[in-house]
Image 1 (cartoon, rainbow, N blue to C red):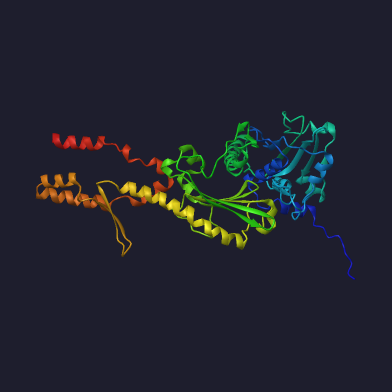
Image 2: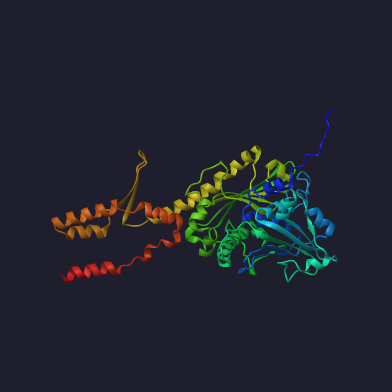
Length: 452
């Protein structure tokens, strides 16, 4: 019978692998926030003070906190079995989230926590020390050392809560001055604020809402469906029964760009962001996992830009959906794909209908004629020769001037800047406003002709 030996991986090598799992700063902070929500936190704050030669990032919550034994166990890599049944609302996955997310952004992770009625306790992973000793050397702080930890919040709650502190950041491009760090950090934090506002928007409202802050500024929710805006349409919905839980499908159609609140439009990346964001919005325990895209079940189109399909899945279906450790990607089961395809046509059709309606409104004038050849499919935009003003003008012209006028109108029609109009209508439709045309230049030209 073959002998069995302990062939555990080298901590020095293993931790380098954990550092390269593929988190971004946004997804790493989101994983820590998941733990805060699971811990019942009502207030979650991300803090990254400017002006430091060695910047830090801190995530503080007022959740249930941990005692020393719980903290020590939770600092273990992969401390939970992903197959283990979870309570509803548990946003965790492998039990590695907080550690692997932290290692991807910083070489030092400190966790300070307090459980109600218990003292403040702290532990730290320092990658430099793990690599030097080639061992899993977790640091446990003595009581008198905890209050001396750099970056510890002055407002740490007396009742309960947890603070994550990242030092020796690897997520920032290194510069020679603190100002370089500040500029880079400010850019990253602006992106992080938008990410949290979108991916946790459903936790920011309702009877059980949480408060999210970034550097003492409240983060307001961003609703990707614009449900409170004029012109929003709620489409069909259904509840699918699956082994281990239910999947809820809800379809949405956004208002037309012209009806969108400019602030809401900007929050979703402008018209270009709206167009790219069409598709599926998959939520795991109310937390947004996948924002947009049709997962190969439909194609992006300008006319379908307003179509959205919302899917709510419970964490109990993680294995069926192959949710990864970052909770940033998943694989939809074939049966769900088949059922879901039935719901894709309706919001896309409604989106097209809205665009076509707006298109018909735009054609309702006496100056342009739009021709669509049913045989060739060719579409042309022509000056309407039946316009009464144009007819009266032609009658008053002599033969030479009539020819000049017709030539000018031909060139005017063929020189319509179609590509530029399409580009601007796709990116900034609200900024295109023909009522703002400057008529002064035309008036000046006419006056000059009469004076001459």
